[in-house]
Image 1: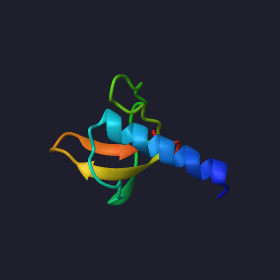
Image 2: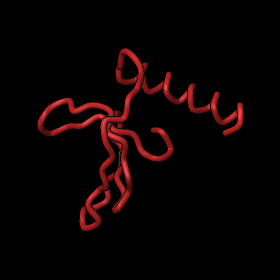
Image 3: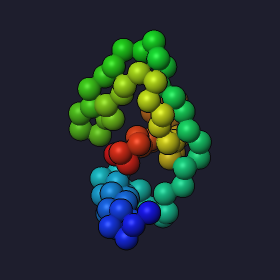
Image 4: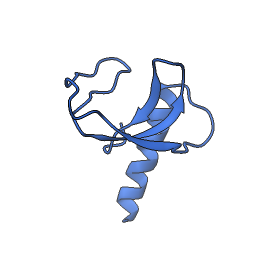
Amino acid sequence: MTLKECKKEEKMDREFQKKFKFKGSIKVLTQMMVDPAAAEKRGGGKNLPLRRGEILDVIQFTNREQILCRNSQRK
């Protein structure tokens, strides 16, 4: 990983922490795959756009219906 890529990832992490008021370091708990049979959904506001078969990093389980995740573009 180059220095430029590393700084870009750090910036994305800071934006993530600011947007979701997340304190502390970001630790990936697990990864999950979006159901390949699920309908694709557009993102909006704080909702992540979902694509079939996409791999997501799970950051935090917020409640029974929502999970704080990020995709491969670190969004």
